[in-house]
Length: 101
Image (tube, rainbow, N blue to C red; front, side, top):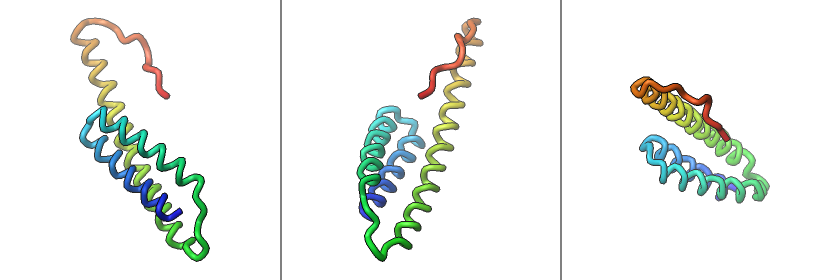
């Protein structure tokens, strides 16, 4: 479990780096890699005697998830602003909110 958790943290670091770089291809690759790491982590067991270490890793991972979520929200807002600006320049109207998954 500890190995899988460390792998999740590494994948989160890669995702945050991709988000900071605003590279769509890298974001997609990092997201897919993170999803695989999370699936493997979900099936892992906590070894006896390592609960304290596991708790520390989970706390750190939750902080990384929050950092990634903040970056996603910022990028989403910037994209929305660019779309709105494009509509203003063209004199067109947006067709409503984009679909989010």
